[in-house]
Image (cartoon, rainbow, N blue to C red; front, side, top):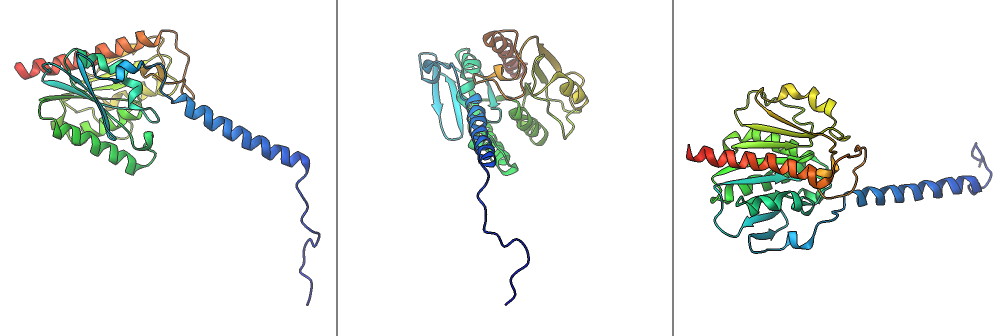
Length: 267
């Protein structure tokens, strides 16, 4: 038999330099992954905000986190969809005070917290629609979302406008791929000047996809991550205002939409 052509030398072990390069790459990958996961970790949320108290009953399930007024509830409620990678609990400081003011709040969780695939987004939308349909004590719904949650809120507004009385888009450049410019739903767009994930330039580029009467609220000095209580997100800008101040301004926009939706029921 003829010997095969090519190198007949026995396999040589990688050189020490190659081994160190490989080890360095693996270490970098591990550190980067850990840093990324930690950046989305819920931070600085007091346990009391996630527990039922005198004014608010807290309900947590696989699909959603709910803050429900313990007393008489307003006729309008909030359906809020989280941003990709962010736990529902990270929005408790922003949203629980709305329930303390009498407005039911439901926070939709994303599958695997990130909704990486289209099927995951459809699952999140099914969870949202189930909340809209199964809570008859809410007569008027305001939907809202942060980042990817804003994109999903836009899909609900486009596909089921009859289910929605108002929409508040927070820290998101959506809608991007479909046109809501003819929508009759009152829309508020809350964005931050230092947002590096949904930058002002991108938001302005998609402005024509929203109605002319959209209410625009810029939070000077805010960034993307401070809309929730989690770490500094990759590519985000640096804030020049406190997280509490940014969320207070955001909450005011949500409260205004809820109050308006309640008044519309009585007019």
